[in-house]
Image 1 (tube, rainbow, N blue to C red):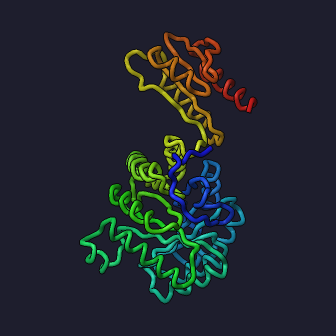
Image 2: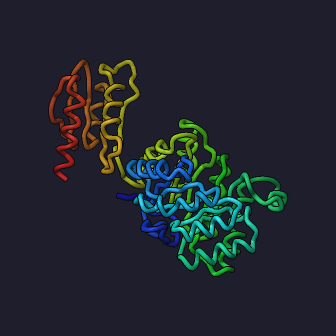
Image 3: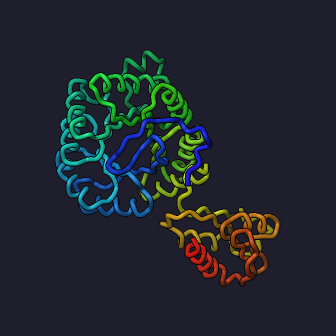
Length: 357
């Protein structure tokens, strides 16, 4: 179920493989492998794990021809669209398209203009989407001077220049990204470009860091733009295991009520009134529901102050205190259970709710 606050930016719809992006499609969650693409088995394994976690489109690094030649075998063994990430070498982009990539990501500023035309011609023949990836770390020098430094205006102008170049070549299967590690700059750049074009926008804070920094920056940058109605695909960039990216991305979408996917866990902050081991309970329920696709709101509350109210607002909840807890189901106080039985009873009631759907 989606809620776009009635003000989502209207973008044109395109398809990356079988996945629609933009238009009236839900915001798509994307990730990128950190395996060596030339290690086909490892790359397939990671993509399938990402897909099981909820990734809907995946990007792979393509640094050389050996990586290009791995694309058909990878494609054969995965179920989600594959995007090839290309830098500098135009022939790799052409060959990635010919080898079956569902889309490519390039930074046109890193490739000679006459070679861009060759890439576009191949993409046009195969109806392959190109993401124009503008990055604050690789803006054209003349543009940096013209705009007085690396800033949102420079990112926006760079994107518009590239759009014009692609359109002059008769190509419009375009997705855009304007990334920076500076969150305010990233937000401002996307707001600027959103007013100037209707191409789908891929949101992300680049080089966001390890888990806590990445989650914080992404929630602020991606979340702010999504609340403004801007954004068609998102990626939370984490230094480390990309499997960590997917729950954060869906957490942002759930928090904004844009996409209700997976479990939403409501838990109190364990103040001095808490009379149960709420941390252990929350960790066990989180672990048990990992990988769940269907939405459910679960409230785990540790005292009688806000506990009954929050639990009653959830699909399933518990208000605990002094070794016991009251289970609430769809707003109704349902049964009293001992603390040792919290986890099995909650999971059984969640299963019961699923069967009622």
